[in-house]
Length: 241
Image (cartoon, helix red, strand yellow):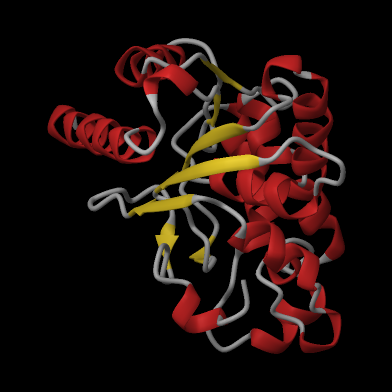
C-alpha cells in the first residue's frame, strides 16, 4: 500500500510539473484541486494541495463540494458540478483564469465545471489523475463504514433506476458492457458530459473543452477503487468530446 501511495505521489508530482512548466513564473496561474470519491479536502488532500503549490510556485486550493466524503458518494454529479461552478465564479483570485488538477471521480466534476459552467473564468490547463472519463463497469469499491452500508444497499437496485441515479454519485458514470441502450437512456451524467447521445450533442461543451491550452491525462496503474472500463483512453470510444 505504501509503495502504491508513493507511486501516486510521484505521478501527481510529474503531472503537475508537466502542467505548470508551460506557465511563466512571472505569470503564475492559480489552481484548484478536486479530490476523489470518499475523500475530503483536509488531511492528506490538504498536504497534496500544498505540495502542488510548493512545486509549481502557484497559489492553489482544494475545492470542497458539500461535506466532502459523504457527498462525494451521495450527491449527484450534476449537482456537484453546479456547486463547483458557483464556487469558482465567487473566487476573485480565479477571475483571470486558473488551472485544474483532479483525482479519480473529481475529474468528472472538473469536466462538468469546464463544459457546463456559463459565464465562468476560463480554465487554462487541466491535469487528470486516474479519471474515469469513459465510465466504469461497476460501482467503485467501498471499504467500510456507514456510508458503505448505505451505498451497497442502494447499489443492489437497478443501476440506471432514477432513484439510484439521483442518490449515488458514481452511478452517473457506470457504463455496463452490453447495456448501452439503458445507459444512454437513463444515465444522468456521463452521456451528457461525453456528448454520447446523437440527438442531444452540444457543440458548446466540445468547444469549451478543446479551448484548454494544455491537457494532461495520467492513468494510475494499480488503482483498484474503480472497476475499469477504459479510464483514460476514452476518445477512441466516444469520439465526441
